[in-house]
Length: 274
Image 1 (cartoon, one colour):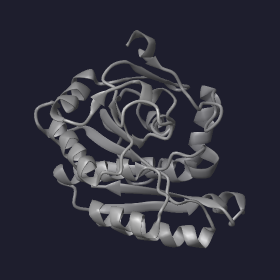
Image 2 (cartoon, rainbow, N blue to C red; image 1 turned 90 degrees about the vertical axis):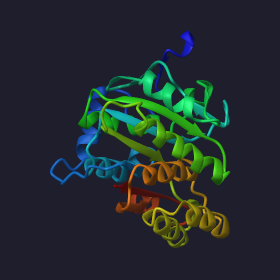
Image 3 (spheres, helix red, strand yellow; image 1 turned 120 degrees about the vertical axis):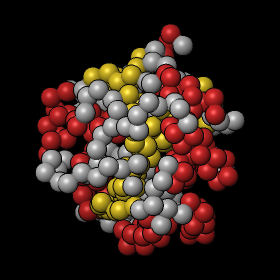
């Protein structure tokens, strides 16, 4: 564990600036500090390079109250580590500072799940959680995290993990209710702009209905290459167990809206669940 006590940035200088000053300036240009904030239970954020998906992530985080505890759920792009990986100790470093893992809360969630396992390897090079942290840090600098990455398409397991997270949050692991669950996912990958929009509309509709089964059915039936669906399924399951009954799309765009290349795009959506 000592080797991984400080989880260092894997994509600083690639997905986002590596210097604190440049990173703050970029985020400042993307956020909306005047928008009305929602007391959200959860949200979905994209995780591409900031030039592509930063405005979607920033405007979504601008709309939520960043809480004391952040449960981070993301996909495992690297294939390293275990399929249901949670970190329960250590610090995460970003250019904006270090963030502590809430060991007590992480341990409690771990104890309630038959699938989640203590595993650091899955997190070391994975970018899907890392890129969300600076946006959260911009609005609040003293929160703690529980990082979880998932590599599975087994919906029953993912839904159970979501319920386990909810049980950990409401079953005595927290003295307060100051938490938000963040699911990290991009939408359709490398398809024409119009086709990506069509597919993503179907997935987004299911998410807004808080319907994990419909989401998975549409992903499989329409072959939607949404990389973080596992995290979103677990997030929706957890959020509903915690009383969520509504969701709101903050912003959707594709990389084509930024680059002008509409032949092969990636889609990005920011959604709030409350």
